[in-house]
Image (cartoon, rainbow, N blue to C red; front, side, top):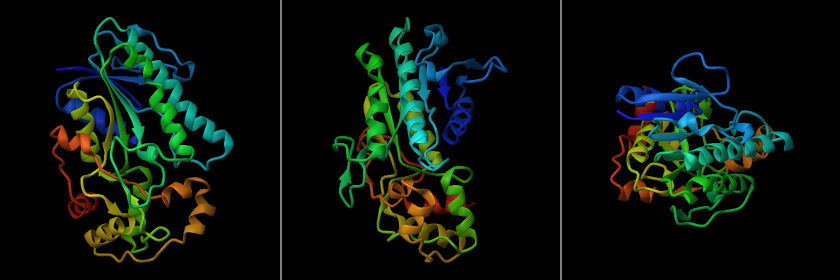
Length: 296
């Protein structure tokens, strides 16, 4: 049994991860903003950019997932600052605490495939250079905030998550609701690659990274079979026995979602080389099986 600290534990991925950790017998310490309500909670203030190293007493690993949601609000200048600060401030605090801990602590720090920007049909591996745009700038600063831990010799993995297919919560819940009424379809042209992964494999990959201290640096968390957005909604429609051909015009998405609409329409053909070579076995490697799981 290990003692694992988790930030962002009330979020979509964090909730599922905490449940999986407990199911396999690990002790979970949840870092929360409010005063502790139980023995498993530790209060922290990520915007202070600091954390008492004693908070990591007895902790074997940290999974750091905290950060403002990308699709929660329109990207006003103020919210863009919040998106950036909510990632860099908390990550710096965690990384510094890991660096000054009196024992080795494994750090799996959240990141995103937004690092790559809009790259069309280009295959993107962990060694690919960064792209351009706001999310790329955010991810570069986010990952750089782990440097104190890396410089101190800690084992640090950067989990570049793609689009998580989850039955409840997140953007996929809204897409599923439309799909059940036969109203889901291509977004824009639908030709853009979406780096998808099911929640089962997102959590499985995070557990894999926690246990494999030899895996360091960026790790793409995306299924081994990249798919275009129109193929994803088609697979979901087929699993539901519903049509999936009504397109959402790109200009309408940009009006509704603002700058975030550009990223929804962007293409990222992400390949998870590190997961593949390190022996992670996907529960849902193929899109059809993932879609059937998603709608059941």
